[in-house]
Length: 527
Ligand code: GDP
Image (cartoon, rainbow, N blue to C red):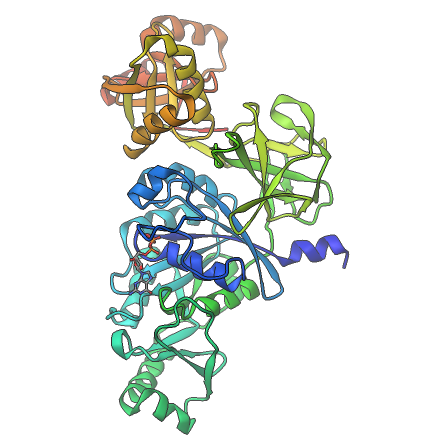
């Protein structure tokens, strides 16, 4: 096999989906610890400990203890190179999360085993089902009293419509948590408390009839385990890799992220079973990772990650070919060839200059305003990756300056923030208002705070009578003209100058749609 294909085959690119507080940040820390990316776990999210977060960067995130941004961490594990894409944790940022999930080949679903399937997990799973992304599951917090494991699997199967194949099975929980039985290796891996910050030496007892097991877990728990295993074998599904790859079955692991137990079992499964970089669809054809010519798409733009640099980074998922420093790439949307000499990689959250990158990797391009979310880069081929949408916002405010002289700065800031997908901005055709549209209410606060720190503009919001927006298109030029003339009061341009209908009420929208059947009103817009 060529060196290129060997490198491609090593890549595993995944994201974690979970409900807030299920343990995503803690697992990220442990995963990085196993990847030897950080010396000691506990540095990903400070949360009052005074330590600086590696995957979070905005002061606001630290204040609120939520991850607003997406970042990327790459680390070696087993024979693989793993890319972990951090998804924003808060519900308000579903749009960003959605786009990040288009850039991965697999997801880890983390469930708080004391709580079971929660809201946000349900929503995120819906998103992964659109592309049948393979899912691994980690039942977390076994060091607490959890719900009956069998019941948890039932809940996942019934609510999320995915079959469960337990790979490990817990022995006790809470204070009595002793470890897990690996169903396929026929071994018990013992848990030790107080080792959460280190990689523990694996203490393993081979076979269920091993006399050492009674000493290690006690007779009662052993009996209970054997009874449960009989049930499990009858009621759950055996692991089947093809079904996993089809998104129809999820391997399930039990453990405690805080106690750093079980995360490595999950990583072993991930590196062994998760797919190497998958093909991606374009408007013309599917592009396979094994193709030697470079291609990639931008799924995220993030401003000023490093306050010292004050730049913006466009995150590009490499789909095919090899990126090499100084390479010339076609920026397809604007039809220009550009030399990329300063792309960055994300070795465990630190930014480094990328010398090379392979399919599955994420590279960061410095963006001076020309790159937008959804943009495709190739080695000359005019194709465009599809499936990276914008959603019509559902909340609207008029934004106004405290100092009216800074109108230009405000507009610049808003347009840049909308390119990032942080928020959407609309400029009505008939007046000089600036309208900010968001999917979640927290985005409004983020925008005002970033306008202040990054653009030095103080802005405030006012309520506005807009309840929904639709991107509009019409093939027939004449009919479009008429529509534009008659509806001018409700028309605006978004940050990318796309025509948008902003409706004061849903009734108004429905009437307008009836009145202009030749006009297409879109709820999502592909970049
Ligand atoms: P996130 O919101 O999903 O990123 O969750 P965090 O990783 O920040 O965890 C939320 C809370 O649960 C924190 O207080 C963690 O210390 C705690 N936590 C995470 N994993 C475990 C675990 O395995 N056991 C226990 N007891 N607590 C945990």
